[in-house]
Image (tube, rainbow, N blue to C red; front, side, top):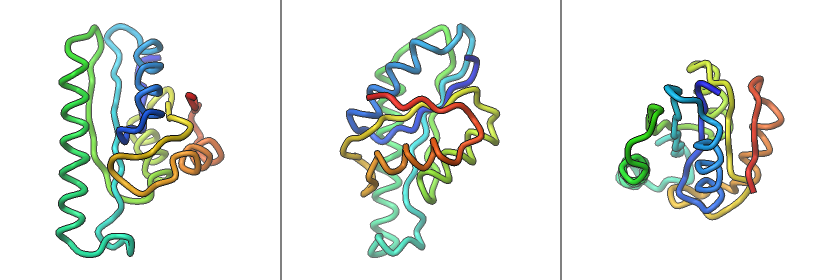
Length: 135
């Protein structure tokens, strides 16, 4: 696999997904870590300040994970996008022409209130790309 997208939110499930993706990525491939935060218009956020804090937390999480991974024979890219988690994962995977989407099956997200199993279920159901759900 040359380009793999990993839905990453800091949960144990997303850590397992990242580990599996590292095993599957080809030399000189690209591993894309994607964190999705709710849109500022989402009613689950109280105000703009809450959105800014959540987005900064996601950016810090992705940056820390990339730093912790160190040097590899593949490229690691981090992204933080806003919107519905499942729809955004599918859209980014399509736009970047990813070969595979890897997600954790469940866990407690560090950056949002998502039920991770439900996100994985939606992605599996609606993605036009291959999806691997890791337990």
